[in-house]
Length: 124
Ligand SMILES: [Zn+2]
Ligand SMILES: [Zn+2]
Image (cartoon, rainbow, N blue to C red; front, side):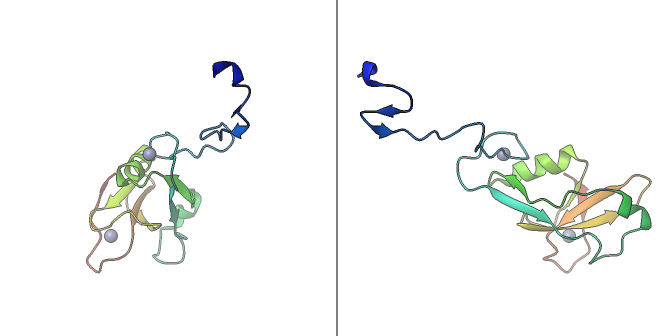
């Protein structure tokens, strides 16, 4: 059988390449390929909801969508690598809302905005 294997086919049946460099989607959190449908997270427009300090406009926050495995740990890893904070009352959803945190450095808290209590931001 080995002698009939040429290129990407055996006996005329095409073997699809699952992971190629051109179409592999990589998780923004752990860097591994995503074999199934990626979980996409977009960061809501930072300047339409809450009132950020003026310096916030100079702090770029990539709105995405960022693609992750369907595992909140991957999203947290991504947020941690960027120094973002996550609200403890928030789940990881497809649309996250950024909140500029007060302080000397520019920090962003991410929350799904699905709760009424005050945000409880902790390092991701
Ligand atoms: Zn991942
Ligand atoms: Zn919150």
